[in-house]
Image 1 (cartoon, protein in one colour):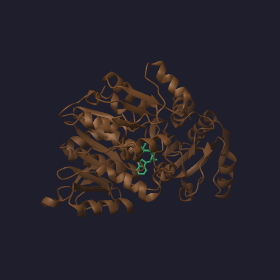
Image 2 (cartoon, rainbow, N blue to C red):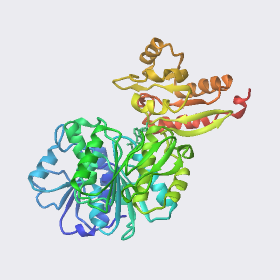
Image 3 (cartoon, rainbow, N blue to C red):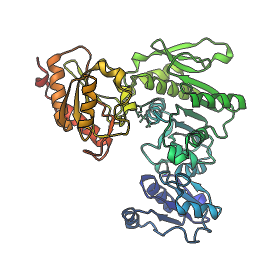
Image 4 (cartoon, rainbow, N blue to C red):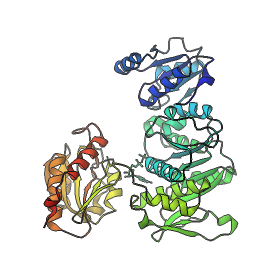
Length: 468
Ligand code: ADP
């Protein structure tokens, strides 16, 4: 657990008692800091009180003595409407910070890698962590995923924290300067919380705050907002800038082209681009979007001083993340893929483009755009298997495009029918793909539970069912 005893002088408040808020409160209490905690949800307050944390309503003029307000990134503090406690805290001249700011203040001698972007953060963060762990570096990996940062071990000088950073966390982290930072991509998301696209871009740009050479800024240049940021960083003469792309050569960067990953970071010293790996050697990272993640992770590990060959060897053994095109099983020539994290059409498209003969399990609670934008990929669908609330709406959509489908109701029925059809047809390259393009909440607690249900059902298929 991170030692926060440098905060002992004055009380610290914690607003929001989710996983990271609770971990923060525990770390503060264990470090001997006078902590006060609050959550607007009575059940969360009760859970905190049950473990002995001092619950006290925040506000009403009792904020002045605080050293800091540790704010849960999920609670609005600016847009669309600031929480009243945020307004009162700022009026009292007290900083709002998140747990990552406390980690940065506690670990002044350690090094930090930060990863942000609209999509691909978890994959890239885990991939960087996997490569560094293979090199036996002293690391801790977390932030917006996995372990809350204040539950990390203290790593001290020589230690390296690899942090997935959401835009919300970036807004609440003020003094951390990353040694290596990665911005993968920016597309419209979370705009209400940031007061529009400009606010969202400004939050993402904070990943590069305070960086100067030889610190390295790695920027995906496959979208316009990120290209503008790359240009700004280069013009400011701040950090070393390495562009990354999944769409072809970029001078001085790392990119995917001609089925391979290329390293041109030696550009300024006059070296030619080096082909570092065939993309087929990275089986857990299929699709163009993952090539962007792979290029960024390669660049980050290179910036940390690793050897190209070691990076590539470690990347090849990356198992991938659960629920994101997770390769579950290969049975009688049929591949089963769990892409439960694809909760909208955009995300499902990333998986559809990776396979040619798809038995597609989809549906759930539909998003506003439904299946819009997926028309170009319907020729890849052998058959669609509909589950959940969206069945009528998606059936109409598929009818209009003459895609054959079955209404299955539930996921277990869909797995049974899709696998039976795939085995019977025995087509080359067959893939049973759960990529629902919908939220899971009509039938599951979350996308993880839905993905696990798929994995369980697939693992129960007896080899005899696959026999011709
Ligand atoms: P995040 O942590 O940013 O939500 P993940 O790594 O969990 O991202 O990936 C979530 C989904 O986003 C994946 O299943 C895939 O559909 C899509 N995705 C992953 N990487 C990228 C990328 N670089 N560009 C666009 N989409 C991506």
